[in-house]
Image (cartoon, rainbow, N blue to C red):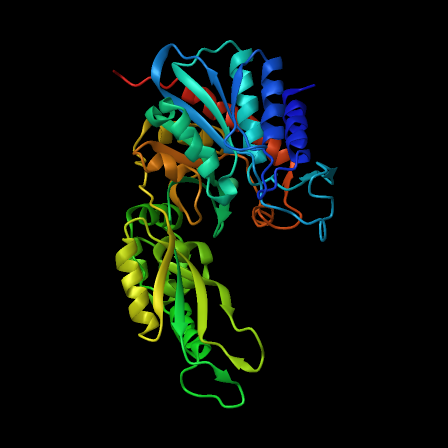
Length: 436
Ligand SMILES: [Zn+2]
């Protein structure tokens, strides 16, 4: 078997192990990886935070101890019902050059590529400068407490990592510009709900103190609020790096501040869900809860929002603004929140990724990026560890959009190329040797 065939075979095996979270059942998957690595002569340790859950840690010993480099991947996936899929989501079927399955994009393909790269270093007899740790975790899709959270408590050394590489950025074409997004930050989670109280009664006699009316009005004000565009360091660098010199309606992009003075450009940002999220706090109305019967006016009503705020924004400040926008008829109740400290991008790790991308793809821009969703990397960034989200497996826009959706799939060709590129990056990381 060639290395590409081996990698594909490994990925198909991982897809066939159903790690839908909830409930997770990742133990079977990490046991499979443990056995796979054992055949390569690589020992690994399994950590069980709960029955049927599991994390795996394997290590290639480096020349020096301390400050390991961590390849991080989560093995759980979001659930998938069979309806609507061209091939069943846990079959690992290949059809017309595509591998179908839950986790082909998020992120078993990266896990397979990391395992392959890890084994290839060993096969080629390369001793890394620092320990390289392969960390396969559970529970990412529901917050990561049993995965990365658990592992950080269990293994002190992880808090001493020099660098962590996981998901969040990719090589992608946008606005006709092929470029690499290396995620160095993510939006901060700031979920909240608004709650209103009112007077009950028979629906045949409507009055002015209906809890639902208050929620509908307040939720509408929040949902339609135009949060101001806020330039921030990473988004400015990203958009400028990609768009500089590009022609828009009536002007040529030179700087972000200049572009944002133009109505046409502000409209362009507003219409692009990703760029919009890079420059604004956002609040999406996701759940509505109220009422028990069609002819009963309820006394309480709730609407829940998933807000993602910019790295520079403070939770309290944002929630105070939400209360102002929502008005006095409702109370704003904070739910969960997350912090995010952006990683620096003037590092040897960023340079290593840039070298690999340019060697393989030519002189395309390699740019820092903000992931709009949350990943396990926030745990590491929160401790001040440099952590990037980047996968060199190239996905088309169409494949990208199948993430968490039906027909999640990856082209076999893209995956094969990604295997090679992942190895090239890991090889660079193995040579990382900072001056003491
Ligand atoms: Zn993921």
